[in-house]
Structure formats: structure tokens, C-alpha cells
Image (tube, rainbow, N blue to C red):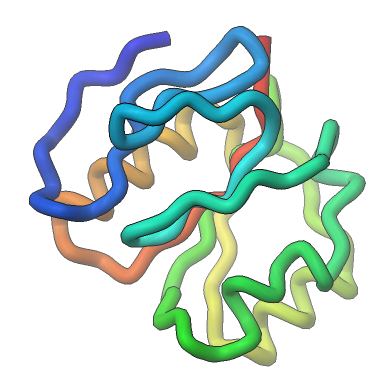
Length: 125
């Protein structure tokens, strides 16, 4: 699905999602991703149930000033495991889980506002 860009300056922008991937800042990615303010990290995840603390390292291991992590869980919102939530909480990162489409739209909106946001997005068809 195509998204209408809000033009957040030089920040990462999610332009489309679906068909098993994403178009982000003019680049195509097949599969799931973590989207940061100025970069994208590809992940080998089919479900939010597969997320482990090691996948969250780019957010929690310093060097990244994320306040909010949006988790796009696929077609419907799900829960993140206790270990993953605790790992993010210890790093001072709030988590909001929703379907992938809503996470893409919310990420773009918060980016346009200049918020310190990241998104972990599970690819959808």
C-alpha cells in the first residue's frame, strides 16, 4: 500500500508496505525491518513471536536515541514477549504494538514531528 509522505527532511520515510516488504526512502526491502531515524536494518523475522532481545540490539546497545519503538506485528496487533519488553524498558524505550500498516503511518507522522522513534516492522502480503 502506498503512503502519502509528510516530507520529514532528511529522516527515513516509509513510502509503501505490502507484498512481503517495504519501500523506505526510495529503497526496496524484502522481509521484516527495523527502521531508525536515518537507517534501515533488515531482519529475518516472520512473526513478532520470533523477536529476541538480540534483534533489539540496534535500539538498546547505545548510540541510538530512541524513545518510542513502534512494533508492526503483521496483519493484527499481538503481544511482545516479557523478556523483550523488559529489555526495552531497561533501555528507557516505550513500546507500542499495532498492525504493520498503522505502525508505518504512525512512524512517518512521528518522524515528521521530529520525535525519536523507531519501528520494528513485520512484513505483510
